[in-house]
Image 1 (cartoon, rainbow, N blue to C red):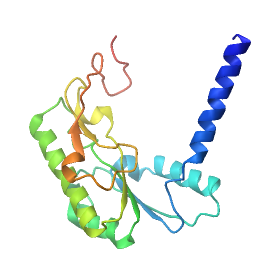
Image 2 (image 1 turned 30 degrees about the vertical axis):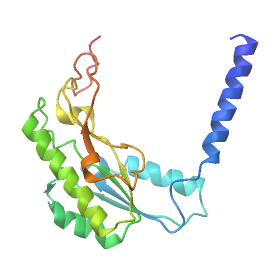
Image 3 (image 1 turned 45 degrees about the vertical axis):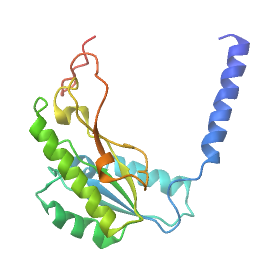
Image 4 (image 1 turned 180 degrees about the vertical axis):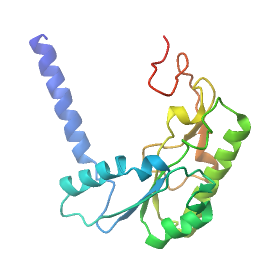
Length: 198
């Protein structure tokens, strides 16, 4: 690497780090975070990593974490009960100020894209957002996009929650929550480890 490129790269990295530190952290003192979802949430991998990050990077921050994943869950519910039962028992009972939602893997029924399945998923996701916003209007949501494998081939539209992976803007309506992806991946992605075809 040329010295000038190294210096420019170092300055860019430093400015990026400084910009990241200049923005306030998303969680506030006293927050109660509910991780809600299916088996991906239930396995407590990303949830534990998130909790560990917060506890180790912000040790003076008083934040509670509630793990409310249930294997096999869908936007309509599952083994833990219907969606409204799950929301009441596993979310609202904790009076969260922050909620993450990671659903969709099971909703696609592990097959090629089907419009009826997508419509059911969209309607169910919208119901969840409306119910949560009604019960806790000030709640801050982070919607996590479902895996590519949950809705079959990726060359078809699939659910893509607005703001996926970022806190949801409070001003948005439920109609904005679920939208179709406007891009197409190259080739098909197959679950089970095969790479995309070029």
